Image (cartoon, rainbow, N blue to C red; front, side, top):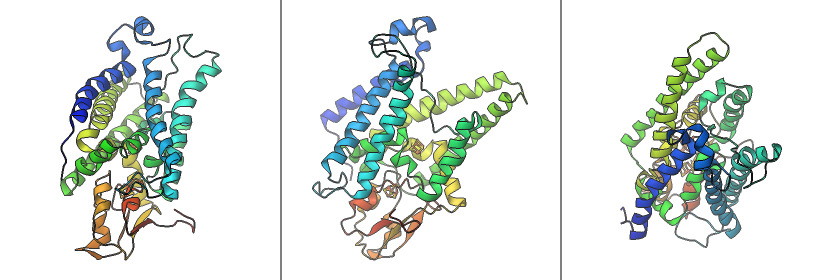
Amino acid sequence: MKSKRSSAEILFLILFYPILLSFYLIYKYPTWFVSADKVASTFYWFHMSTSFWYATAYTAVVCSIAGWVVWRGKTPYGKDKNKPLSPYQRKKFASIFVAQLVFFYLVPYILPLILHHHSLFTDSYEPVNKNAYVYVYNGFTSLGGFAYIFVVVPVSVWFFGKRYCSWFCACGNLAEVIGITPWGNRWVTERTPRGPTARKWEALQYIVLGFAVAFGIVLFLQTWKVISAPNLVTALRQFQDLAIDLIFGALVGLGAYPLLGTRMWCRYGCPLAAGMRLYGKYAKSQFQVVANDGCKGLNLCTTQCPMGIDVASYAHENGVATQGQFGLQNSPCIGCGGCIDICPVQALSFKKILGGTS
Ligand code: SF4
Ligand code: SF4
């Protein structure tokens, strides 16, 4: 049953949307507001760009919550707040902390400052990093992008399923940490769309993937001068930037946290997730969530799943344990482990891979 929002939460929501929208638009599209030569004098704060401050605030939120979970050593899932943090969750939140701090902040934002001998807060400088790692078309534009999208990610999917989404990705990092805060957990458990219709809509993600691949091929052909279609490239890029990145990724993806849970973008929009799911399904990824004979039919696992998976349907039928299992063949599971940790009778686990702990 959905609980009522408190006045503090309503106030937060009223402030949240205009702040998010303004900050994001200034961050990504400052020239919509002022001419290019005025961006630095208008939108730089203490000599650093809005993009830098957006990344700083984002990283501060992610790392403080992830670090707090690891430091406190108690599970963030379920009502028993004194239950020790499982080794899996300790590793997951430590990975989120390190990935966010190192790969999505220090390397793209601080390292360029050091390399260009700029000092913080004194010389105006914008270490630009507006290249999202989840847009598959990047795999067609550089050798590094190709290796990342077509080698590193698939190898990781074969072994670990879509844990990339709950252990590493910058978008997923925020979803994971917000999803364990008191409000965020309520958004996940009470507002995440579930059921057959919600599941059917996941096909939308394959359309976004189709667009990303088509865009990637056009960029590739253009780069190698097989075609010359600057207008087509501009039109596709504008569609990508506005319809997919701004509207779907930021406004709906992030803005829908309080309304539809933390994984709207990851479930319905992200092209990389669609690619991982297809690859995992047809390459027979080893990743599986397995139910044992201990299930008591409590259904807490289903409620906790941010991806709307009916986990309990694999674990029991009318309260009788069925010992089922699922992976990328039949679900968009991101391996967050919330369903496993919340189960008070330890009826769920990840399948062990290559004899190691999973
Ligand atoms: S679904 Fe996409 S955006 Fe979400 S965590 Fe996975 S890779 Fe990142
Ligand atoms: S099924 Fe479990 S591990 Fe997979 S996404 Fe849902 S809660 Fe996370």
